Structures are given as structure tokens and as C-alpha cells.
Length: 66
Ligand SMILES: [Zn+2]
Image 1: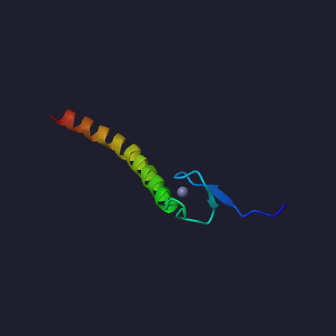
Image 2: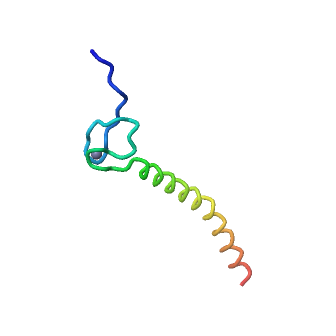
Image 3: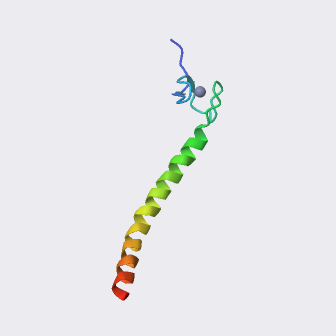
């Protein structure tokens, strides 16, 4: 039994590829891009969760002024 290299499954073509690959050699699926998209979604959700209470507060203040 020989030692196999660390692999990961490609979401694009379901093939086992080298874990170090950033682009799938079979279907050109970009792993780095997906990772950055998840980061952006996380940042967007964080921004919404921070901005929304402030928006509600401003809306309340504006309503009380007029
Ligand atoms: Zn692939």
C-alpha cells in the first residue's frame, strides 16, 4: 500500500484532485474564487447585521422628529 497524496473532491466534476490545486485540471473549477466569494458573502452578512440596527435607529429618530 503506497502513500497517497492529500486530495480534495472537485465540486465541479466530483473528481479527486491534488489538495494544493487552486484550479481543477479536469474542469478548470477555481477553488480560490469560491473561497473569496464565501468571504465576501460573510462580510456582506456582517455588514448588514451591523448596519440594519443603525438603520432602524435612524428611522425611529426621523419618525420622532417629524
Ligand atoms: Zn473539476
